[in-house]
Image 1: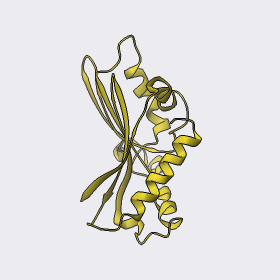
Image 2 (image 1 turned 135 degrees about the horizontal axis):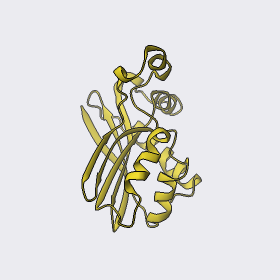
Image 3 (image 1 turned 60 degrees about the horizontal axis):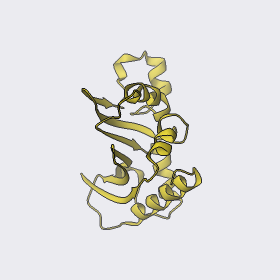
Image 4 (image 1 turned 180 degrees about the vertical axis):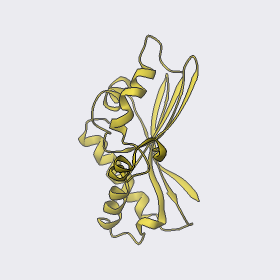
Length: 165
C-alpha cells in the first residue's frame, strides 16, 4: 500500500481554524480516522467502529467502517480544552466511500473506488504551527496523479469557501 502526501497548507490563524475544527460543523461530513494528542498524558483515539459494541440493527444502519467527525468532535474538544494547549496534536480525517466515488466520477479519473484505500486530510498541530496535508492511500502503485490533483483542488476550494484559509 502506497501513501503519498500532496497538498500542504500552513494555517496562520490557528485559533480560528481550531474553532472550525472543534466547535463548528465545518468538517462534520468527513470520517474521523484517528487522533494523537500529547498533553500531560498522551491520547491515541481510533475512529474505527467496533462492530461488536452495537446490536445488529444499529450495525446494519451504520454500514460504515469509521465514525463521522461530528460524532467524536465534542470528545476531542473535551480532551483539548483547558488552560494549557496541547504539546502536539495530529487528527486524520477521511473521505467517505460515497465521497471517493463522487470525486472519481466527477473528475473523469481512471481509478475505481476499489483502487483507493482512503483519501485523507491530516491536521498537524504544535503550539507554533498548524499544517494541513492531504494524502491518498492506494491499494496498488500508480503513476496517475489525476485524483491527487482533483482532491487537492477540492480541499483548497472547500477551505476557502468555509473561510478556513
